[in-house]
Length: 301
Length: 304
Image 1: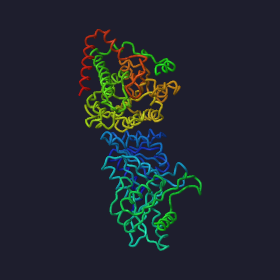
Image 2: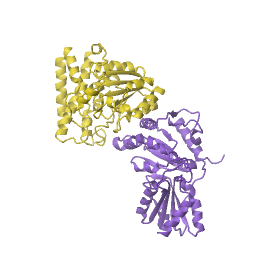
Image 3: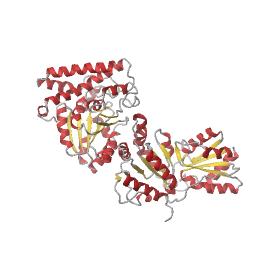
Image 4: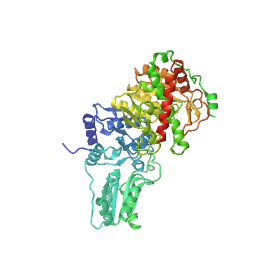
């Protein structure tokens, strides 16, 4: 048997949670049309099909969390978090600090690209803004297992920014640190799949770069793994699939810059609506965009 | 101003004898009626002490007083004592009538670490898990407690009390939660404490429908009645035999939406009506003793 894909990993974790932990899975349209890209187990007890009740659905998940069922709450398109966010932000994330009682809900928020203005959003930056959440964007089976174990061992609500582009992935994404690198590229979410190609494009112009993968967004741990290559290259670029203004890329770039004393730039989505039709889709930065941004950063360092 | 608005927009159901169950007072044991009155006194005198603490600037946080509405909470405490509770922002009455410690609530309002939430949450956010009571706090977004109560009932199957106001009843997530509870036949008693005011806007200016009609259409058993506690007890007991169900209780908020001010006399004073009823039943001495004892106890509580 070959390696598990990320989708298979999520399905396996979910099935085990239902069978062994008395967990729950809640979401809209999760038990049909591919079972959320093959991530939801079928034929098992504990999968609750919510009616189309954004806001209330999230509130129901929070209620299940505060009485101990550790629900997995699935939101098939991250843009819908604008509706579903209220009970999560206003209650789940705040109750531990306010009352010393927690609401551990595992929020699976799925991102896509090229599906138009309300089905292509990446909102993990929004959830990083609010106190009380752990926020992550795992793109590999190993990372997903890690954050699931963290969720089960802790008692915080966790915002898991998934991306459909990652579901077939079977490989772990490793940092690449090279001697005499001119820049360190820090990838977040699905942009991480573009880093190697961007590095090849830069290499073609004689520019060597480091690649560092980030999947824990909040709390963001500044350790030797992220700082050492940055300090050696003296320049960084953080790339994210969300909007750049007030987004994860700028936030993390700021933290890295402050901790290292190096210039760290950010690349996210332009401040424009993600339209349905090309060329107005305002898509996730691809290798070419990363290449251009890295060259610009080097030129103006 | 509030009372003028009420006069303009009051529906026919807004009267103190609306849908009262005949004989309910007589059927309720006298001892229990006196206990019910004691719980109403607890809310009244706790909040009178609180108002003095505000006047002397000991308490400075925003306050959501229950006085005027306490008969509904006192009645429910006889029906749903073992339910998990998801109360609204105005919940001093539920907390006190269901057996919460007054000193812990006082400390919360004083911002002390000995408060219910270590002085961090305040008046509209009462959380308490002690003495067999499971009360989950509200964070101030009206009606937010309703989907959470429904989710809790789905998750653990326990009888659940969700209390909200007539304003919260209009929130989309409250209405869809009623539907979800009906679909999954969840053991939830929904209580709409209907003071006919969303801050100061009367219901008639906000909507042309009744929450009981909506809930009924979704398949819930429903009752709409004034806040006579003996009637509320009988209605609620009957409804609780087949949950989910909803009762709309017509009440009169005595004080402002937030704060300790008031705009004059309410349309009716349920506390006074209950007291008169007990006195009429020959309980003058006991009623006086209960009132005096509670007034003294609460004076002492707020003196500390």
